[in-house]
Image 1 (cartoon, rainbow, N blue to C red):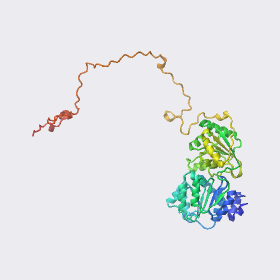
Image 2 (image 1 turned 135 degrees about the horizontal axis):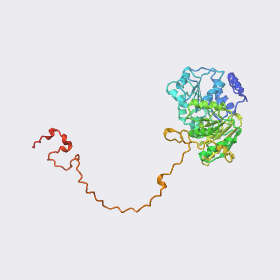
Image 3 (image 1 turned 90 degrees about the vertical axis):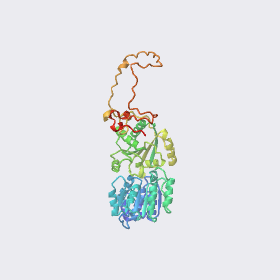
Image 4 (image 1 turned 180 degrees about the vertical axis):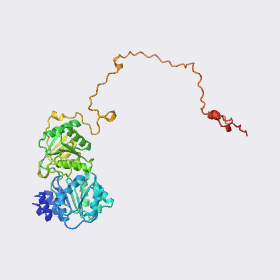
Length: 481
């Protein structure tokens, strides 16, 4: 089968040919005809199977009729991350170059006003993350009553990131008669409930078994110690055993681990860069562009890079940490072996992570063999002896980092040179110590308050309160009676 048999318009077919696509993938061949018939589609396929073109191509064909109106976009594509949204925009620029369409990208981390200006001019396609879309709607800069087609991409990632309440709210704001295309690599119960609620008689398409991994990916396990420093040494040794690395992604579970691994690999001569959720959008895009251009060989990343990023020629994936969610493993190793290419995936496994790995093997239904790393080579232990966390170096007074300076041993104290005198038994302390006779009787305080049990009929003694500065009117005699 080729693309000309799917019912796409001549403009779209010309753009597909110019882009170098010849044969549609399984998900594209099954989803595109139903989408062109205005049917709801629920597509299940493993990562790297071409889901993006499965909704971009029919959308381009359907948008050739009609025009956009100010603040009322015609189609809406929801993506879980900024990187995925920007990638879909690139797909429209490549496949829709013969169409005069206005595409608006609504993502966080960038200025609000330029995005609102594109909506004001009228947008045929809006590609958005849920948070920025709702922000735009609540400010009155966007109307959703004109949406003809809704695409929810990477739905299982939406679930992991906590976007399901936002998705439910957005769907309720859209017209009931819209067309919905729903794509996911896995189908947990919460996603199944969402499809039942918002899709109408959808065409269910399973190009491959859900949560399966590509057969072109060679998967291996590497047994490593749990101690952090030894685990980093094992990672460097593993990287050195792979001579055919063109570029690779090293996944870690925590952002702090990502930053520490980047520092460690750079210190040992590896060409590495970092990508995680705390980076601003411009830095993230710059890092991705450098990785795509092969300016960075090893991309150290959190799961922000695990879903949908299309970097076709990633040769290796290294899991420094076993993912705590089994579905994340499918997405991580799906960054390699894309579009039928050969890929390699290595997962570093500690004894404490065994329970997570059992869940992964149950999900993918495959036994992954072990890779014998052997003894860590001596050259991998070169470099700094101590790898501190960023911003946590040892400091002394004055703010200077003196962890590299050799400290002189302190001289022993003078008291330590002489032998300690023998302890004498203490004399018994007398029970009653007589007071010295030189002391006289304790003078009475002049400012002491009068006793609580005083004679009410006696004249008050004001001198004890005022002393020599007593006012004259207080000296007048008080008449009795």
